[in-house]
Length: 289
Image 1 (cartoon, rainbow, N blue to C red):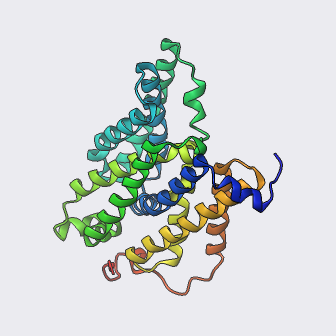
Image 2: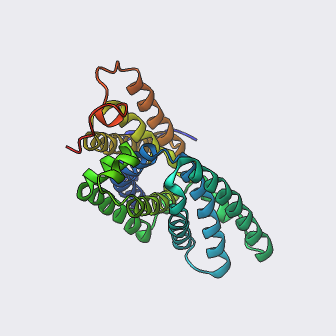
Image 3: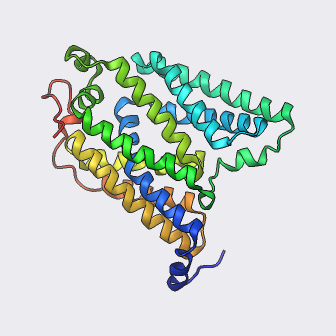
């Protein structure tokens, strides 16, 4: 692939598919890094892997039935997230459930693709993403996440701070942990499903987890960590997208590498103080301000 001049990048940005892709990445940078904060805070790393496989199953069902594959993927992820919520009482229980869900989802997806005669290339192509194929419906989904996720964090910021700090402390403080965990797991599942077209299922961490990892190093409370995550997400998404256009590279890997460089750079900065949100249990309760 050949590099293009920056003037040509400006011309590319005038194309409707490129504009939709840029808007999608900007919207994703508002909502998805906040989802990453949830994933890191609840220590539910296996969830994103399981939801990638569930999304593939939903896509396979959509191809079989003639329905919108991405809509089926989102619905499958939402149902799976709600279904595993009762198992989230302990990290060990959730990890085991995610392993089972991952195995069953990929097996079912492969079976559906095999017996239906549907061309599997279209389904597996989403593992690597297709950002320039982002349509209006995709923008609506990502835009909804960009509104709903920050709004939920602002509305329930105290309860979320307690839940992400320590589940037992949250329950003893009157937080309805099961209901809030259910909502969070559904949002995580839908966010992973909604982001796979942007970077591909294999690289969705660039939009969710990596900005959150960098933000936890810089923030000192749930509010500041969330703000840092969104800021880093916007910077990474816009920079990575422009670099990908400039050098005619696939956006997904460029976004991951850009985010990875930021995470590594942030972790080279000496940590002057420990966040109260990440402090040991003997420390004071976390602040949501």
